[in-house]
Length: 475
Ligand SMILES: *[C@@H]1O[C@H](CO)[C@@H](O)[C@H](O)[C@H]1NC(C)=O
Ligand SMILES: *[C@@H]1O[C@H](CO)[C@@H](O)[C@H](O)[C@H]1NC(C)=O
Ligand SMILES: *[C@@H]1O[C@H](CO)[C@@H](O)[C@H](O)[C@H]1NC(C)=O
Ligand SMILES: *[C@@H]1O[C@H](CO)[C@@H](O)[C@H](O)[C@H]1NC(C)=O
Ligand SMILES: *[C@@H]1O[C@H](CO)[C@@H](O)[C@H](O)[C@H]1NC(C)=O
Ligand SMILES: *[C@@H]1O[C@H](CO)[C@@H](O)[C@H](O)[C@H]1NC(C)=O
Image (cartoon, rainbow, N blue to C red; front, side, top):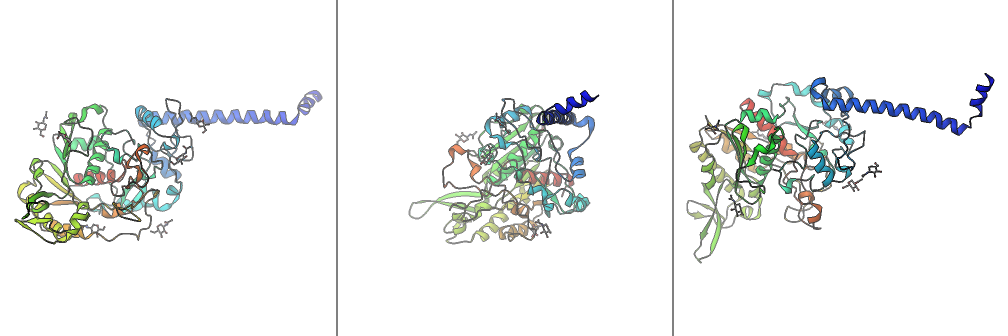
């Protein structure tokens, strides 16, 4: 008895401590291992257990823990247990991101304050969000942190233009793709790609407008495509993969016999050229003539129009010898007046050429830009912005162009569903491509930043959720 006591006594203290430490460590690792296996099991069998991330979130008040992934090529994926990678990339997307992005690109919310700030937490709006979808103002709301966003893994969708592929171009902070739009008065249905495709079966959905509508078109293509198992059964009909050069594109979803198309038409009215008295060729804009391409989509089932940013560019805002109407070139016309005339031309065309029993017409409102320290053409920037504007009182003035648009729409016979996204985009100074419109290798110091389009995944995904909600409720 004494000897066994002595035996322990005789063991040198450091050795004893490390022995106990060893046991403790072993115990902890076994526990962790068991926990990991369980969590991985959960991840693999989401249906069988019905333990949705949202339940975990609400219960714990913090984002759910989803196990980190290890890349197949041996590079590290995230190991940070306190942060939450909120999408589980498929094997292929995992590979893409492992090979093209550095370690800290792996879906981590890098600013923990985003989720700590109650104003962005999911819980804070749950009570306010139980109203009736049918009567709710979809555009009065907040951006909230969302563990189910984005709706497609970044840098995996072939329809995302390089210029919008911020993640692929090396943007490391990822908060901007983990926010969902939450109207004050109701919950909007989650855009499930397959359900929307079911809605679109045998139909044509067309976006007509400027590159911000292309931004939205690409977003919708990615959301829909990501819901499908056989992704090769979705393709651009002419096999094109570069979406900046041509004036129209159509992507077909074979299994749903439907197409989702884009027509470039930044003014909706027709750019023109005339020869002046001195024999010089002059560019004008025909305020009295709808853009030529519109006849190609007037019988589509859903059309989403937009026009806005091009009316703020130099030629349009200067308005000198540029606007033409009924054979007359205005020596000087304000952009606002020209916009009113153009939108009236558009409205007349819609009222006479579109059968509102067959075609649902949307107009997407003005999307906010966030250039600071200059304009888009004079070195304005928005890089380094990683959080939305949280101040509820903040708000740029509602653009005069959109007030004009509203007054034109009011006078139309055709019901036009207005996607009033100006305010919701105004909060999102964090979500523009900025310098990530190009990969690092092509970036030149002092190159223009993009603070008007949006990274994808990102803000236009939310516009499509609202589009879907409005299609469902019919108003
Ligand atoms: C993975 O991360 C660990 C530390 O977090 C680091 O020591 C190791 O070198 C990394 N491995 C690779 C392949 O990057
Ligand atoms: C993570 O990204 C930031 C910003 O791009 C960079 O400065 C930092 O070195 C990166 N860290 C690692 C571990 O790659
Ligand atoms: C959150 O919002 C409330 C009301 O809108 C405001 O009073 C408060 O200052 C905000 N908190 C933060 C941290 O922004
Ligand atoms: C596909 O949709 C078109 C209408 O867009 C319809 O005319 C055609 O019959 C449909 N084809 C099939 C195979 O369902
Ligand atoms: C697309 O644009 C390119 C370059 O402008 C042109 O060469 C090509 O013919 C166009 N393709 C189609 C199908 O219109
Ligand atoms: C659109 O939203 C703005 C706020 O940004 C609001 O002033 C305007 O009245 C709204 N328009 C419609 C038609 O609801």
